[in-house]
Image (cartoon, rainbow, N blue to C red):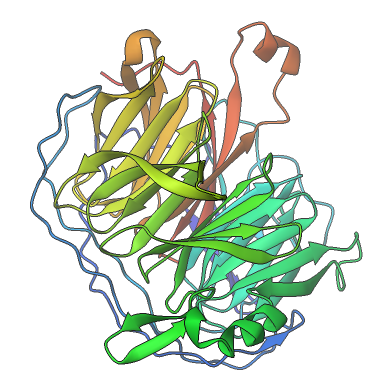
Amino acid sequence: MTNQKINDTTLFKEKKNSVQRQTFGTLLNYDPIILNNQDEGNNNYNSDNNNNNNSSPCRKSSSAPSVPMSTAATDSGNTSPYFMSPWNQPSPYSKSPWSTHQQPIDDHRYDVAYEQAPAGLVGSIVREEGHIYSLATSGGFLYTGSDSKNIRVWKNFKDFSGFKSNSGLVKAIVILGDKIFTGHQDGKIRVWKFCGSNKKNAYKRVGSLPTTRDYLKCSINPKSYVEVRRNRNMPWIRHYDTVSCLSVDAERGLLYSGSWDKTLKVWRLSDSKCIESINAHDDAVNSVVVGFDGLVFTGSADGTVKAWRRELVGKSTKHVLVHTLLEQENAVTSLAVNLEAGMLYAGSSDGLVNFWEREKNSISYGGVLRGHKLAVLSVAVAGNLVLSGSADKSICVWRREEGGIHLCVSVLTGHNGPVKCLAVEADFDDDDESAEKGGNQRWIVYSGSLDKSVKVWRVSENAPSLK
């Protein structure tokens, strides 16, 4: 690999077929750092903004190993504690071109190219400052969130646009239509709208959750206050700690937000109102996903995975706890759902990925995937593939076979820090007809890391399994 410095931006040129099929990634030791709280401020995207310090307490979880019911696929290494590593080095982002290998990009600022490969590393986005905490992809756009307070937008391997909020690191991004919802360290959910192809004014902020009007209305009602800490009360409609995860139920028009304040909140998108707040867990809510059969799943640092369903209770509709699917000492860090197959996957701080299968009237435990030496920090699903990113710097790619068997088909290495988030989209360069006929469906995988980079991979559902 060669690199050169141009205008404070490091360009990395990847070697052809640079995927290393190691059995496991190398060990990583990261010390958590405590952040300082940040006052809120919102501006349009500006790459010349000043540095600010952020903060929020680090979450700790037990490192005692759990004993899963069964195993699948490859053997695992040693279990380890959950490493959550917020950082106190926020800064505005700088221009950072892609390093790729397909056709050259028609732009004099991007002297890079990339080459079609059947599988493996496509390229990287490398930033001088800013650890990547969240990713989302939709409509050909890639959205990246970091501790620099900015959400950056990429299209066709180019820096397309961006927008920012002086609220600290961006922990979660979800997209519904032309709306982008971002979860922030200050406990707010900000709403942005795509306004067109004009790069400078492509996105504008259209509100936040809760709305200022609803928050003020709630604040003057003493009955709206709940105790959030000892000797501290706040209106129930707002998260008082970091918004760590978001998920959208497009069919019902609902947005779910999980927070380090241990609550799950439900927002009605038609009028931006918080319609329910659930004391869901005994510790930080790390992940929430809208599932199958009307279920919503949450995973927490208290070591549990819970299933909720919206039901009629008396004269009102509320979410009720249906199942507690997992109880362990290790923190649950991430969840992913395969809606078509009725599968739920949960990554945890012991380096394991537990999974469940839908049956006629219940959910049954399917087994566990062992492939990492350190904590699993992110899980994603693409067709019959399951991807798990870990603090050991690697990404394991699993293929689900008939009978609930999962085979490890690849171990993607190349990051120099924990893989914090994953996003997946179909490989549009692939032959759609061959995929429909049961051919080789391929996917583009984006991985964000605390090494300040986003890497782009191509994976195939028909890849041979690792022996």
